Image 1 (cartoon, rainbow, N blue to C red):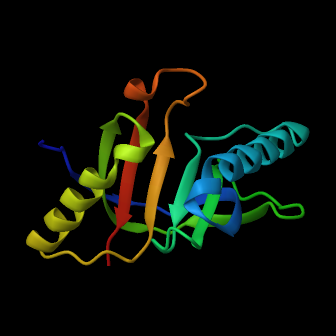
Image 2 (image 1 turned 120 degrees about the vertical axis):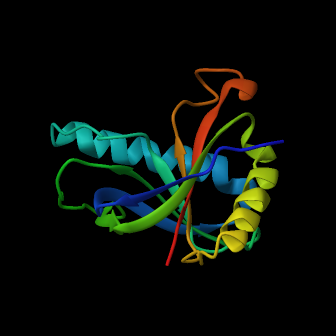
Length: 152
């Protein structure tokens, strides 16, 4: 399958997020719970997300994932409890929009890593996924996920 990889230079993006460690099997429930808390907190402050919610993966240990779930916001905001302000760092990124089930993204990741290597880039070690819709809104085959690798 062919993928469309796009390299961009981005400014730092303020976010509100929750960072946890969990097994991949618990990830859907943890993401759902985290996004619900963040969206509720945003609503209480009269704020809205700037873009689609994201998950940042700091490792790929499926039994002990280090994952940050959050939403980009227009301006830095204060946190509350587990919800903390942060940012997606500025810099060069390669991205690809994938259409299909979440559990079938591995070929996209593999192709992106190969493309990064072949084009002389080095990933920072973090992978982002931006979720443009949800399994509660569309069939799994229609899910749109933007996969992003920040580059050194």
